[in-house]
Amino acid sequence: MMKMTWMRTQMDRRNFLRGATALSAAATLPMKWPKSAQAADGDTLRVRSYGDQSTMDPAYSLGVFDEDVHANVYNKLIQYKPGSEWGWQLDAAAMIEQVDPTHVKFALRDDIGFTNGFGAMTAEDVKFSLERYVDDATESPNKPDLGPLSHVEVTGEREGVIVLKDPFAPLWSIALPYITGNIISKKAIEAAGGRFGTDPVAESGPYLRASWNPKEKIVLKRNPDWKGEAAAWENIEILPIDDENTAEIAFEAGELDLTRVSLGSVERYRGEVPNNGTLIENPSLFYVWLGMNLDHPKLQNKKLRQAIQHAIDIPSIMQAAYFGAAEPSTGIIAPGLVGNRAKSLVPPQANFEKAAALLKESGETNVTLSLDILNKTTYVTMAQVIQATLAQIGITVEVNVLESGAFWASAENKDLQMMLNRFSMTPDPYYATAWFTTEQAGIWNWERFKNEEFDKIHVEASKITDNDKRAAMYERAQDLMEESGAYRFITHEATPVIHSSRVIPALRPDGLNLLRYFGKA
Image 1 (cartoon, rainbow, N blue to C red):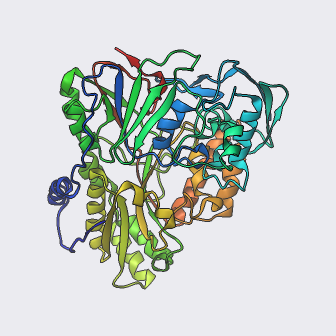
Image 2: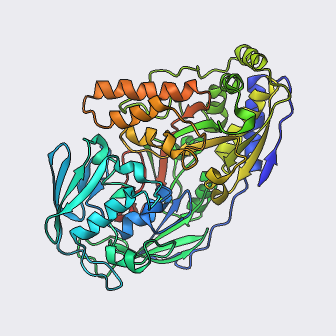
Image 3: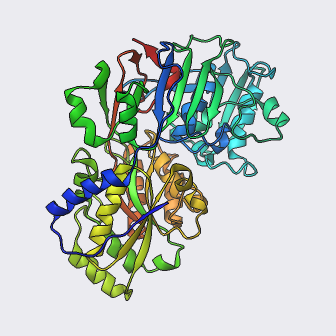
C-alpha cells in the first residue's frame, strides 16, 4: 500500500492540473507481464482483463474479470449478441419464449455435455443453477440479478419453465445473458460439497480452462467435445493488468491482441495504432464515483459529507485524469438509458464558499480522512485532484493506493472511510440500483447507504414496462443517494479499445469482450 499526502496551498487550476498529471505518471509504476512462451503462435488470442480471476463458481463472481472466463467455459440459455445494438442470441437454449409476464418456457439443445463424466446438460441443471443463486443459504453476491425469481419448473429432461414472483423487465438484459445466466452441473456441485473455488469441477462451453497462474495469466483451450459452432481460436490467454498504461506497453510490444486503453492515449491512437492495429471507440456504461462510509465514526456528520460533495471539482478531474475525453456524470445511470438524470443535485463545479460554510456548520475541525483507491494512473490522478480541492477548505486526505486484490476486498475493511469506485453496468437501470440497497450494505454497498424509499423503488421499478414511469423512479433513486451526502458522482468514462490486425473482435455495445465469439482476420 502506498500513501500520499497533499499540503494545503493556494494554486490556480491551470498550474494544479499540470502538476497532477505529471505526478500521476510517477505514482503508478508499470507492473510486469509474463513473456508468452507462444509469442509466435498464430492460434493463440491474447487479451487483457482489468482484474484477475477470483473464483470459478459463478454464484460468487466478482464481475467482468470473472465473467471473462465463465462465459467461455459455461453456457447460458441466451448470450449477449456482439455489435453496436443491445440484443441476445440463443446459446444452450434451442427455444425460449416468454408466455406471460411471469413465465418463460425453454427447451435445451441436446448436444451440450459437462466434462469430468457429469453427463448431458438437463433442465435439472438449469433449475439447480438459477435457484442456487437466489437461495439465501448460498449467500451469492449476485442474487439481485435474478430479481423476483420464484423457481424453475422442470417439465421434461430438457424442458422447463422459469417462474417469477412478479414481472421482471431486466430478465432478458441482465439475469439470463450475464453472470446469473451461467448454467453449472448439479451433479458436479453436489459431488464437490455444494460449492467450489478457483478450480473448475465441470465445464460445458466452447473452451476449457487449461491453467491459471494467479496475477499472471489464465489459459483457455478449445473444448474438443464442444458440438456448437467451432471457436475460432485454439487458445485464449487472459492477462490480468490493472493499469491501462501498462496494458498499452504490452500491446505495443506484441504481447497483447486486445486491450482497453486510457482516455489520455485516444488522440495518439486515432493517428496510428502500432502493429497495424485498430482503435474502436464505444460509449461506456461504467460509472465512477467517490463514496463515503456512513457507518464510519468520522463520517456521521451529514454537513461534513455535504461539504466534501461541494468541494470536489469534477471538471478538474475530467481534465487531469481523463484529458478532457470524458464527461461528468449525473448519477449511476448513463446517458441513453432509462433513468439517466439531466443534471445532478450537486453541480459538477466545486463551490468552495458553500463547502466551507457547510464545514463550519458541521462543527468539525482538523478533519483528516482516508481515501482508498485502486492502483491505476487514472485513479491516482483523481485522488490528487480530490486531495487538492478538499485541502482548500481545510480537510486533509490521506490516499491509500491498493493493488486489485486488496481493493476489491474493501467491503471487509472496518476502517474504510472514503473510496473511489467504478462499477460495470448492463443496459437496464435495475443493475445500477441493485448494489446500493440495504441488503447489499457491507457487500457491494461499501457506503452502507440504507434507505427504505430507495429499496422500494429498486423493487417496484423492475416490474414496470412503462419507461416514463420507470425513468422517474430511477431518477428519484439517484436523488436519494446524492441527498444522503455519501456520493459524489464523477463520470461514465468511455471504452476505447485497440486490437491487433489478426483479430476480429466481438464486443458488447459498451466495448466489453465476448471472447467466445472472437474471430480471426
